[in-house]
Length: 155
Image 1 (cartoon, rainbow, N blue to C red):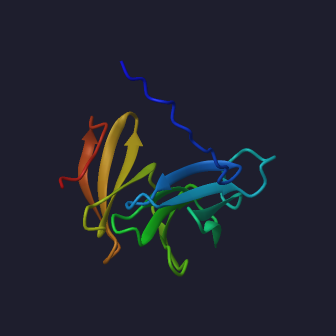
Image 2: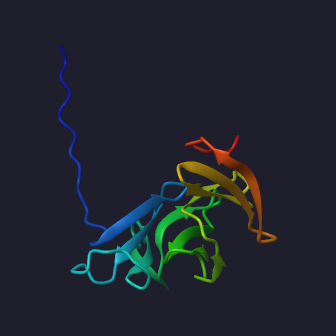
């Protein structure tokens, strides 16, 4: 019986005070929300910043306050939360943001085309499901008072 040698791996610290992260669709880059002051462990508006980490290039701040990033399917944009009611759509290349005042509990996933975002709001245990058109910035309600617990786009 041949026994393989144990694999060696290297662990690298990417950032400290990480609140949340998401891998880019191509698996090469991380979007991270990190605490500006790690002694203040409560990720609220103005206390976290959005950063990008790429192997070889390291960590780069986008200079934007936001948390809970989710990449668009093409890897050009990130949606993240700022405070309780604002979603930020961030262009990864130039850090331009579009702020949307959307009172929602959860957001994502992106549609496969990247044109739409799913939004979710819970009210007394019932889920309201919405679709945000990122080209027109119009919100359409898809489900009301649903017991649905997980949403997904068809490929």
